[in-house]
Length: 410
Length: 209
Image (cartoon, rainbow over all chains, first blue to last red; front, side, top):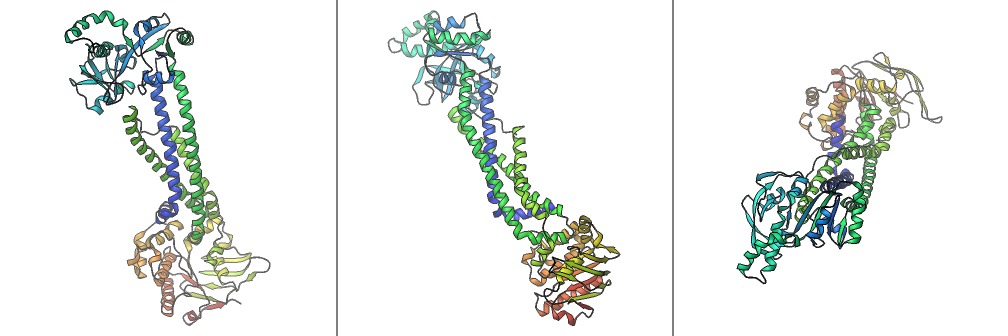
């Protein structure tokens, strides 16, 4: 019954409570959204650099190189000679090295030439069809396949660069031989084939300017020998030995015209930059929550003036002081619970649209819409605390209400 | 059955009251009259246990309510005392029916809307059960508050100026209704008023001086 009164009191005068509820919903929504976004970006980013101790590529911005070589959300810094990179790939400190050749795309999704070790590194397995075996055969990541509606046996031309509308490489068609099982890693967003395909694609492209069709075919047969003259974009390396992580990047950066970067360091730098923004937003959200507490307090305090008689009446009907106090507290807490729930729903709704936008712009999607525990558990407790604090003074006033005086003046 | 003995009350050293002993048997009606400032409402609040007398006893059905502790008193009040006020106040967000059910709930009894409906029916406002109290006419509101006061079958029904804001027609209707219900529910009815119209109806009265 007390519950019913509390709900009816709120529902009957929705405008009184609107501001407090709205502020609470927005603040919970922002905080929860930030939690979801931050947690998933960090998880995704950390996940994708697992097993990559160092990235080798062309000189430029190390962050850009990591963003392009590991996450494929930035343009590459340039190309390096395969032969030159190979020296380091075979370095005794290196446990494994995965060469990457990329720069072309299909409808905005990167076409990556690499070895099968790349797929193994992310524990990617083939869901449909089979792994690429020959040149110009590719497998598509699950997200790419979904969004571009790629099926087994489909063919397409690659586009130069990572944007749609670039120059199309018409010399060879890629054939999709397999779809990769969703792995939650960067692979979901890639189209992967062997390195030779990427080389030949560009080989032809270059040769075509000087050679006729016959010569091109002849050129093909020689290519195996010339592969080592070819260029790759980056190499992902894993070390045997932690010392290498300190020594190799320095040696490479000072003594070669290539660049080495440690993804963990670059990603940390990125997070700390991102963190400043997120922290600022969070502080703002806490501020809004404080405002909501104030608003709920003012609402309850004002309502109490109008409801004094009503409360005194309940005392004459046998209601105890504690019960009246409970009623006021309950109203505030119901308001806060509804604000919390709406905030959580709001954050998921925003995340859904954010995810769609991020998928188009950055090939990054947010998949976790579940409750973020324990953080959102704490958020709930804090929300409840806000509700109790806001209602404390009005509740005590209800507790200490002088019924005789109130009734006599009513 | 209501009886008081030597009841005194003081708000402060300047404002103190010494009340005459009163008694009112079940089904009887006692009118307490007196001009403003003579302590009519104070006495009524004392009888309801809303105020505590500085000395004296107030017995309702053999229980001296001046000896009851706060929480017990709240409970006792809900169970055995019904109150009707000059202005009919309600929990505004609840329907008429729920307002009466609330009286059952707060007194610690079982919620029984059938019983409430029967009472509303006997008071002629059953059709208004789902309306908000503010949508009722003043006469209907007063009936609803009588229903609320009677639903727990109290030993004593205390009415504070129940007719002062009503026109003659409604005044007599409400007064008759109170008396009739008090008889039916075997309740002692105490009416505090300065409304001289009621003196024509009730002969057992005490004047505060």
